Length: 180
Image (cartoon, rainbow, N blue to C red; front, side, top):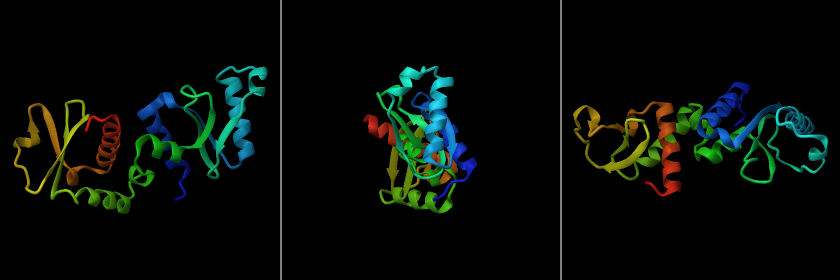
C-alpha cells in the first residue's frame, strides 16, 4: 500500500506519541543517495557530529522506496539505522498502518478476528484510559453506565477507529510485557 505524504506524517506524529525516544529525524526522500545526504546533514547540524565521527559511521538503510525515513533506535544500539516510517510504526505498535489510517476493510477484518473467542469483547480501561483487562463473553453484560469501580468498559464494536487502534496497540504492548 503506497502511503501519501500526509499519511506518512500522521504515522511519524503517532510514533512521536508512542515512543519519541526511539526515532529521530524525518527525511522525505525519493532515492537512497538523497537519504544518505540528508541523514549526514542531520547528524552534522542537529546532533553536532564532527567530520571525523562521520567517517566511521555505517548507515544501515532499510530501503522500501521513496517516502519518510527516520533514524530508529540510535540511542539503544550502536547502529545508525534508517527505516521507513511504516516499518517503524508496525514494529513499534504491532498494528497495521492501514488500521491506524482508518481503512474500514482492514479494521473490520481485524475486529472480526476478536469475535472468534466470544460474542462480546469488553475492553476495561482505568481512569487514564490505559487498558487493564479484556473480557470475553457469550452474553451481553448489563453494566451500569458501562462503569464499574472507577473503570470504563467498552465493547469492541463501540470503539471508533482510533479507539480500536489504541486498543490493539495497548493490547500488543501489555501482552508483550506479560501484563495481560
